[in-house]
Picture (cartoon, rainbow, N blue to C red):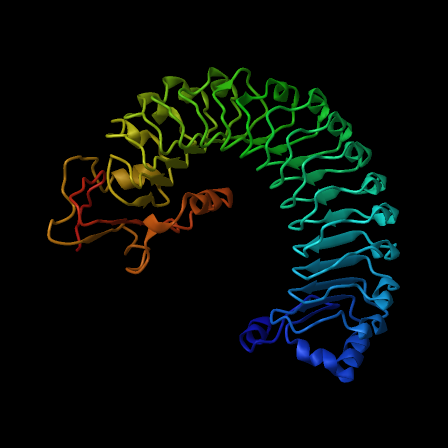
Length: 468
């Protein structure tokens, strides 16, 4: 039934929720009577064609309404009749607001989103929204935050990414219920000591700023699990992070990191892409809970044998470095699912590579090993594949006069990729997402394909049967 309604173009929503995409219906009193009769509790108006100049005053006729969302409109102000409503959630996305000076009149709000609305200031009175739990001010032009923000003692999530903030106010420390904080994409140069008072903080995003160090109080964030410090100016992994015994994910990509002096033993994911590492720090190999390690596009001259210590590793991203071989010890990483070697100078794989029986994807796109392709192995993993093919080098797979395409098949049937698909065109992030979801979208677990190019290439896994 639901599927048929989707095909007919009718919106399928949860009970009490209404989504309106054709704003012309809002001029009809009949439509508003219909919404009132339904007892609508949540209304979303998606004004993709920018037809609305103001929030319809008829909104106040919906006595059961508790959640209102408006997107892509030309609305510049919030009318007084709306400010008198008993709303719990109020969301304006991509509007053209001049100000929200009276937003505090919506005293029962628990969720407020003013996203990409062109706002240049937030009134100090926002602190009067004492029940507010979620506040999202992403994508505006804010240069500062009001002191009143510190009065929001029940606030659990604060997002102010994509603004023009030069500092984090010390009053942030008063919002002690915060468990998620996002200050990414600003111009912040320092984190205040007051952040150490946020004892319930679980996720902190402060990427794409100009930060060089962390305050000493940072080590008091005992519940912190996810920390994103990418695109800043750190020269090393801060040693005080070793005090954060619940930290699971650390992302410090695109800094100037050259060292990591001490292990962070609780880490399960460490991302140090696009830094200045010339060798993998010994501290990395002491993070023995790691399941994901990404050090793409550094200056690594070698992958040391100590990599074998990371026996829980499931994903290893080492693209764009200087090493030409992998140590044989890498083949003892029996939990490894993803191995990404894009644009590397690796020339051959270890002879005992077939020990990686759980490997789902090996990506050597642009590597010296071979040309553009992604290997997505079948459900039996590398061992099942090795029963069909032999590792061999110096085999020409393409003809000089043109491009050929090879389909490799498993015993289960034909290649899972159609001719118009190109797994080599998938970016590394999509491969990563497939792994994170527990599935391999490139392969669907049944086979793999190699795309040739016009130049002569070598094949790492030549097929038993070749098809052009």
